[in-house]
Length: 33
Image 1 (cartoon, rainbow, N blue to C red):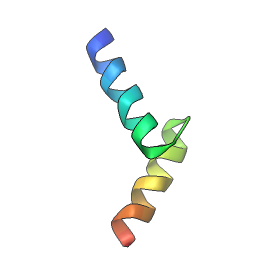
Image 2 (image 1 turned 120 degrees about the vertical axis):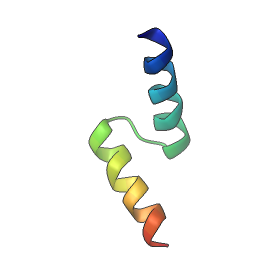
Image 3 (image 1 turned 180 degrees about the horizontal axis):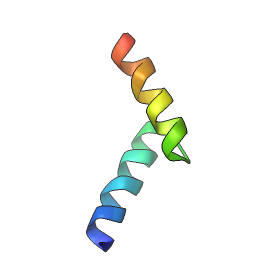
């Protein structure tokens, strides 16, 4: 479980996101560009 949490936190960091919702919003913005 810790490995999964680490991967998720790394993804949030790369997206400059603090929550799952903000990560989704940022991903959608990146995909539209």
